[in-house]
Image (tube, rainbow, N blue to C red; front, side, top):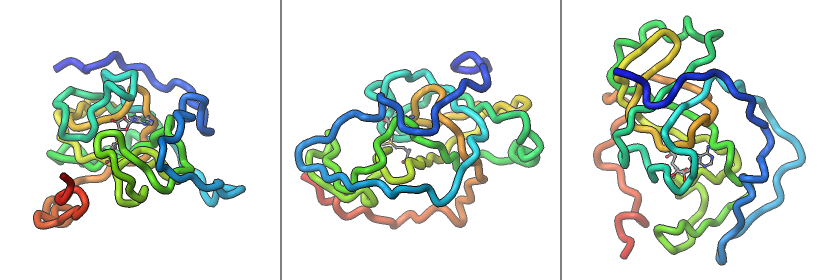
Length: 182
Ligand SMILES: C[S@@+](CC[C@H](N)C(=O)[O-])C[C@H]1O[C@@H](n2cnc3c(N)ncnc32)[C@H](O)[C@@H]1O
């Protein structure tokens, strides 16, 4: 199986929000002043290569597309993949580097009603950490081929964990506002 996109690691990516991140605030949305310092730092441990270069072309969530995507782990961390090849599914955490970080109340375009950031899976959040449960198709050296991602090409990777159905699956979980929407 060949990767969805050519492998190339890494391209530099600014840690501070870029101009692209400043994508405006919709009527009804509320922003706050950001804190004047960071409390911690993260290492970007790789890059996620996907077919999507524009946000509007990305799937809205991890189940909306079956495109094969490539996780390119920085070779420095390659030994940390030991055992990963035995997993059918992984939790992938990534950094939505093109997001605003100051919005506390949002009006998602596809819902049209305001919700608090922490009631949403929007990429715009104080720490723009995204997660998806992906299907692992293949491990090729320090590269993983997976299905189930929804991010832009070259999105920074921050962690990979095994998905445990016995721990992580809550089959009767409810998001009330989503279930009750008109
Ligand atoms: C709704 S979020 C869900 C992310 C993740 N599955 C989660 O639940 O945490 C997915 C959307 O984020 C946007 N997005 C993708 N990559 C991004 C990036 N690098 N920076 C900012 N926004 C991004 C796209 O509009 C995409 O449809």
